[in-house]
Length: 76
Image 1 (tube, one colour):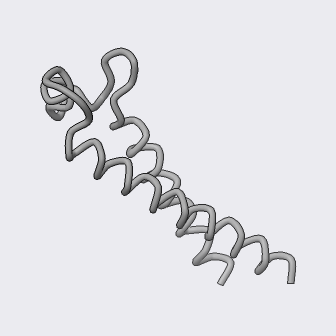
Image 2 (spheres, rainbow, N blue to C red):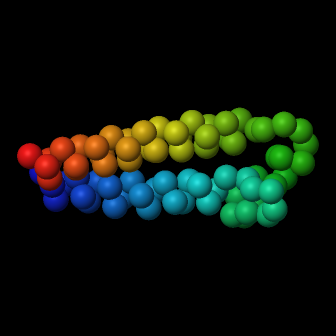
């Protein structure tokens, strides 16, 4: 069980890093490679950016749940 949770945390951490890097920053970020810079010049946050925010929050919650689950497995 601990091994499965550890693998899940590694995968979730990598996905979380990629999602955070895709967000539009104050300067030019990796999101510009995928067309994020074009849509942000025309107005407020785009649908893609809002969906990226939602996905990042969900993955962050799953990551946090994995950390808590792993700590409970290793403690007991």
